[in-house]
Image 1 (cartoon, one colour):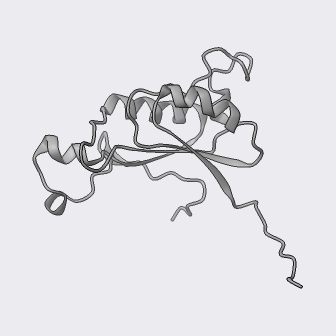
Image 2: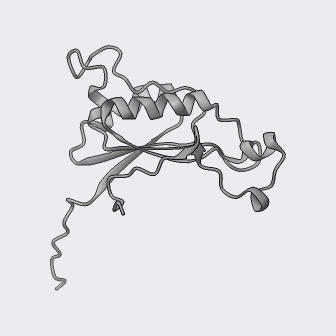
Length: 145
C-alpha cells in the first residue's frame, strides 16, 4: 500500500492565461471563484486589457475589486515567427492598474517584434525587459534581497 502524502498548498499559486480583453472578461470571473492564491499571465498581450471591474459586479463601488483578488500579473509580448507588436501603452495600463490595486507586476519583455522594429539582434542587445527605464520583477513568491 502506498503512503498518503500531505501536500501543503499555502505556497501554491494558481494561474490563468489570457491574451486579450474578451478572454479576460470571460475567464477572470470564473477564475475568481477558485479558492487560493492567484496570478494572471497576460502573454502574449495582443491588445489593451482593462482589468477593472467596469460593471461593479463583484466589489460594489471598488473598480479594482477583481484585481485585488489576484496576487500578481505577469505580462509579456509575443515571440516566434510573425510575432505581433506590443504597444507600450498597453503595458503601462496594466502596470498602473496593478499598482492601483496593490497587485505585483512582472514584465517579461517586449517579445520578438521589439527586435524587428529596432533592427537589432537578441545576441547583441540582450533580453529587453525595461518599461519606462526600469524592470518590473515583483512577484509574491520571489524573495526580495
